[in-house]
Length: 92
Image 1 (cartoon, rainbow, N blue to C red):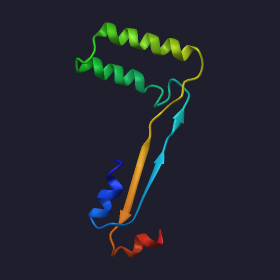
Image 2: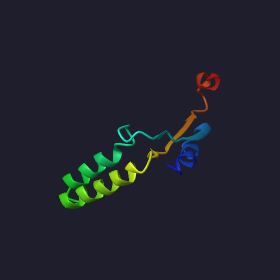
Image 3: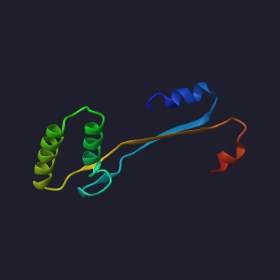
Image 4: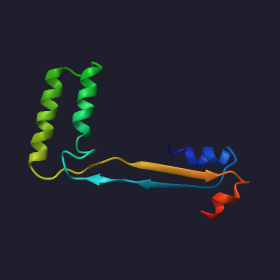
């Protein structure tokens, strides 16, 4: 993703921009707070971990969460540009 602005320029786009957005949640049942549960389930399903490892990891995760609010999120990077002849985008 870090290379996207350069790739946009090479492809002929102008007015290329990039911005990061990092939503932060503190509720363990929120989308990002629950991501650990979902990832552990997928890791188990594909055979990357055993059921015992999943259980032990989630127990440790929940014990950590019991000590206070969690902070969870994920960085989203947005990259945009326009073609040189796209006058409508220039007004936006």
